[in-house]
Length: 538
Image 1 (cartoon, one colour):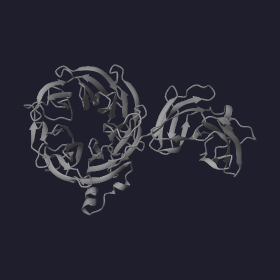
Image 2: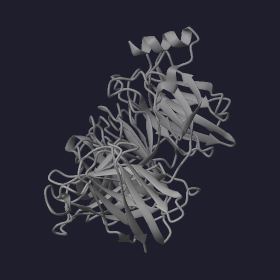
Image 3: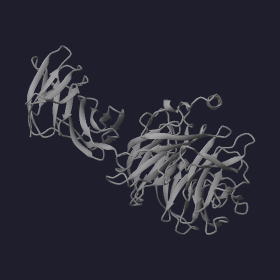
């Protein structure tokens, strides 16, 4: 039904309702529909000054199209140049090596093997051939190429048994057999420095495999992933962090420290904040040295019905979304919307494949996240509080403290932003912190147990401010949980701070940006009562 609606929009000349979809720091440059075929994964290719999108097609009734080659040199005017033939299949993966493209399929025609396309003659022609390695290769799910070797994953043959069939590309038009890994099924994976990081989806794990000897690969280590449906893997630019997707409803993109292959460490996981049954699909890492601070890695993920997301991975233990673009606000089911993203073009443009609409060319703005990290403690005992929630109100991002009370969170937004810290059995803290791009704001936050200590007021006390002499922050304890106004003025009467109490009994205010000196803090409740207190910044 959705595809019918899309075609109707196009035929009637209506502008596609992309604007209704949520997007941030990514703008649309152009859109090229594929109304006679759905799309699968996507890759890019550069020849001279020209940029091309290699769009995997699912075919269609009588279509038999495997891949479209689109000239996107002028990002606002994509031009379809060639369509490469192939059997109909909803799965299509593409990679390039030199001037050659390799295209896989899981078509029911198990005699097809893979398609090899010679891109040397673009923009004039594209010779293609089907390659089966003498009948060995039938259908293949995914692939990767590294250092002149082609790794075919999920291949239906007796050599790899669904693992990895390894081919030598010394002659890229005529690959030769180099070896195989056949211990477990591999859905997708990446290879670097003779190590294969395999997404073993049905085993719910990734494996690190030494493929120095292609005829006899050796498993170094395995790691179960958070949702145990490990779809794809990709390495950080320095090769020390592995990012994985679990292709399952409401799952995450997870980061692991694999700098020591024998001691894999989970770092963090990222989930689209506004996800509603969404599924992360393919994730890649782009290093953008023009964005300074820490390292310059960003994680690009095609997120099916949530479109594409950009995550700042400068701090892999604190992954923060800094951009997103939903290609299709009409997409409803989890397996719909954006199948693939490619972000390695010299222009900096991203190309996206929407499963029912077609090709999108978009322009991202890579922004550095602002970080809030620290520890949450019990104010009565000084002990850490685990599993306390930390919510950044501006984007509804919620994270939780660890067993040691530490937490890491962040946002692409900057300035004074409201944050709520909560834990059952404790008074909720609602406060503001200063968020600055590329800066880590470290905080120690004290939560007071219900009915103890500072939470108890006598009948004459409506509020309590402490400490009155402070370094960076103060706490405000209210007797009644109601909405009110908080303001701070300097000795000249000039207002230097303003906030809402938001109905919280305890709030912590970050005043680190104030100069040293005396101030007056005022609180006005809903009954128009005003209370004030002198405070001193060291």
